[in-house]
Length: 268
Picture 1 (cartoon, rainbow, N blue to C red):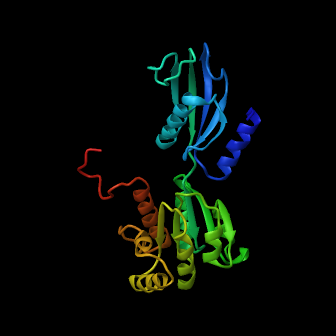
Picture 2: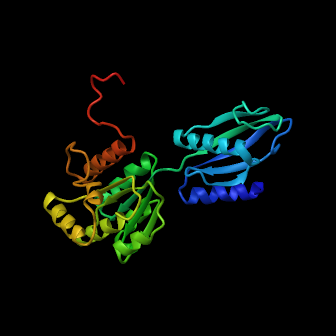
Picture 3: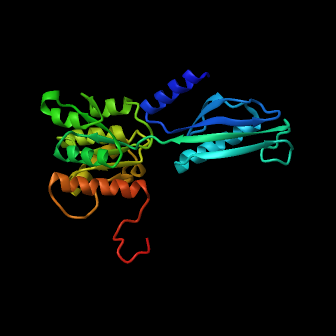
């Protein structure tokens, strides 16, 4: 890959919401696989481009994955002079690389363009999430909600079309449509995704009936147990904005695997 190809690959990764790292050879001395080169590494270990192959590239890939996981850049030096070196290679030289991590924004998928949905998207955008709004209504009915969303997809069939959507793994889903039947269809579609979080608005009675229906349709108890419903943390409030704070607080708690509760009295 040449420099332009690398830039195009980075742009495609950004558009797809993928985290990645760029590994660049910044120093090379003596005999090395390559004296210059650039490689893109994704979180799953797949790559584009090369810094020369061999053991040193495999080590660089592992280092790049760690950078993605930690959200940090790194400068790495690789010794290629002896079997006992950090690479085990005997080319006779050494090389250094700069690893730059590019972390995608977390994606909030808001299914339902109601008042709560609008407030959830507003808070999510404010704290650094990208947002995707999914609804079945016409533009003129929800124009202000569409304008507030980072992306919008109109659907006719919530379940089938959500299942078919290419949504990145690890997204956070909030279901709050304009009808119980739509909520059920949206949840059925969302359960097919590799989600970091699925939350749904609803009373305990509604949830029990919906879960029974989905179980009869083949949903497993394990799948349904992952759904946060009734949604949100129990912090009080009744307005759409207050409910949205509760929802996003729960999403943040899940995202950072935090215990929640008060910080008062804790050595933070």
